[in-house]
Image 1: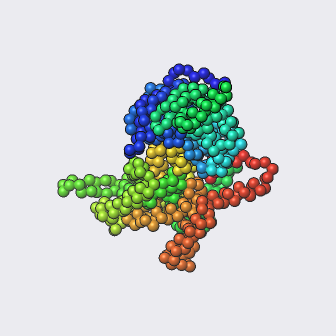
Image 2: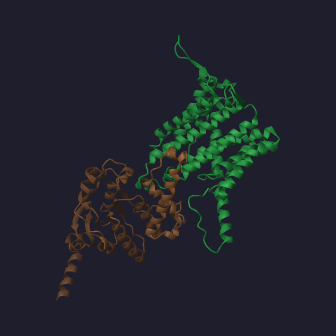
Image 3: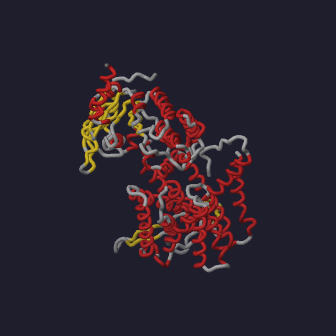
Length: 273
Length: 346
């Protein structure tokens, strides 16, 4: 269905540690993201997933450790500089330009792809007008791509929740990412919206975009991921394919507790018997 | 196409005003209103599009006015007991450009200083800046004549020196000049806000962290907005100084900033036409009320008007009118949802 992930490493997170005062939110986290894959970061609430996202995209300064994207260290760069490198994120809390139309939301996302300079704009050069026309078409294409073509003229605030989440993805895609970080993209979506989002994610992969996903919806995580990294209390407790993760005793303990693991083992035993 | 024609018609209408108005005092009111509209448009770029409130905007206006006045009349400064720096008078068009440039440089400085902190801090920095500039103008008597004011400022001239020249002593040419600069300012602001730069400014106003996540350099565009805004306010100051031909430290009064803010907010901040509509209302209203109420009562009336507008038309007059217009059109053509061309909202 999608392009095969290569073994080429694009993002390296090395010994990443983030402390808030006395609390260690992320503790010596180390993992790699391979080109073209969908890697999911999962773990119970408070495990440090969003904190790690914020550090990778420059919204938080790591206490120690290194983050590198295609050989360039991201530590100390501003979020917009990181976006310039092709690392674009969405937010856990729905985040659109509420007072603007969906179409304009995407136009704002295209910022990185435009070349016009302020003086060219002020003098109204024809090249600026030509670029604007090209970008308007591009914005429509992106809206069509995520399935919001019919909503172009609706205000961001006025869209239903599920569509706001799609608009967020459209804004991020407009910034032409090579690595897309999605922070709980389907939270608040109903099951049919979720399954169509999974299809969209497949389309995004076809564009050759690597995806780092934080998500609580396990059906989605297991369905779309090539690999899964499990966090608990700021540390990585497992790293592997979805099938391996589902069998991993540490993961089951972290999510469901020790007793459940035993009962599960028992019931499995019964089934066999 | 149609739109172009309407715009052309409106400009033509305003250009024809001196021919049929027949009252020089009314023309004077329109000139000062036009100057204030340029200042309000410049404030709107900051307040309406980037969402930053400059409560010291009059500083840029005054800097433009003083710079242009000083360069056109010349000045001398006693730097040491033996050396006096003498600056010869320069042509008005040159001094006017210097006024714009110097105001823009001050805007750049303010932007650089305060945009690390934003919001309330920006308001405080701009207020303090305006007050400092006012005190300089009031107390640096060697340069600015302080409260005695700079007099005999030359008016604008047009033409080729030596061959043919028109000096703008009369009201009419001044009116057309102000109108022309209103149009230029309007076009600049419109081009900006419908471009990459303007969208970056709006993106910051709407959602700063989302804007940075797609690669918008926040500080850069806020500084750009301040520079252009300050330059435009400086141009308004230059127009004022060469039209009135006298400038004193009262140009820095806080009340003028407040007037600009009122014009922008009642007209509709973040809309292209808002400052023009608000500017016309609050430029002409004082004259309309002059016979009915004293200045103090007028301020009370403005206050009440402002509260009413903000209460009943929260976005301002222009957004309320365009919403009403859109609804009317929707009702008329219920057959198919018209593809309202995005990005052309005024």
